[in-house]
Length: 199
Image 1 (tube, rainbow, N blue to C red):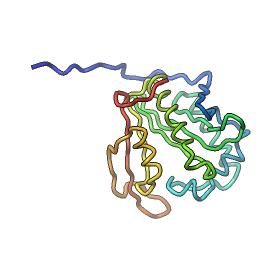
Image 2 (image 1 turned 135 degrees about the horizontal axis):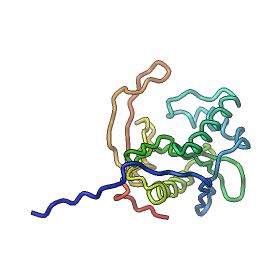
Image 3 (image 1 turned 180 degrees about the vertical axis):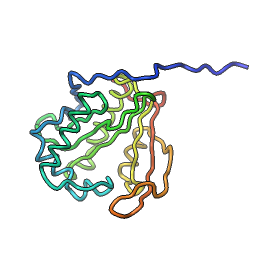
């Protein structure tokens, strides 16, 4: 009987997000989020449609957005998280964000998240950004797996994840409390060995 070979990996990811990795796709620039994005980021984080399935409080003003940008910058400096602003190539407008906001260095695993202005929905933009970020995660960060936690009612996000090769890994009943209500969560994941994305 042939023995199954186990490929051993280094136990701890060594990440370095300096200089910031600006990424390009056919239509997009994925770039660093700065103080110049406060207005657009406030719109994203306070818009009812954008925030519908995020199950977290909407932003109430620029102070919260400034604090969020500081948090993003801290994650970059500590190499514990990375977030990109999504812009079309012909404009500096921030139309969305995409990030690895929880990185488990011991397990070569990171959680991905994304939001986009409603005016740009149904145009393949998030899919285009996601393809680039998946490739960066696997081939530059050396991730072994990527996960996404979604509200099961968010059918659009689930379709996007499945289109990108993610499969449902877990379903948790009423594990998340938001606004006094216990909500379900679904976890989708993608293994590097199952990904067709590359740089």
